Image 1 (tube, helix red, strand yellow):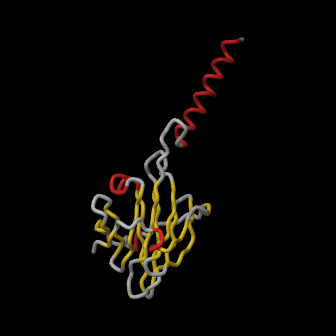
Image 2: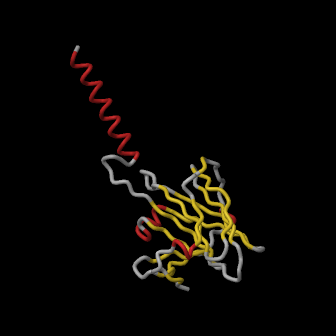
Length: 172
């Protein structure tokens, strides 16, 4: 009678360990990503954006020039985390995959900071402190279906001049 109970107990403890391992803790170092999007359109233009993943809809935000929107998340266990955003201002409308885990893990580590200009977004190259890793807008014909998910109450909009670390520069 003792043997079957210990087998179930071992299975239960193993299951709890595996669930915690997949969830990121406490035995795994929790790596969160701080993603920031700054309005670099110039000419006094406001930048409208709407970002989401399959699980989180971060809502619509309006950024004045040099203002930024920031949110934090933990990439998933499988390495497939994807956040995409629609950007619009004046008569322009574009979208971009703002975080693709396989593309961005090595480029930005825990801080993925983007400047969005009329030609496309540029990622902060933390080695040099300039926004010179520039990308093109995604092709509009491949804009995929979007699933509405839960709201992320950790998302924030800040005035850039108050919260910038001070060492990053525009790199155009």
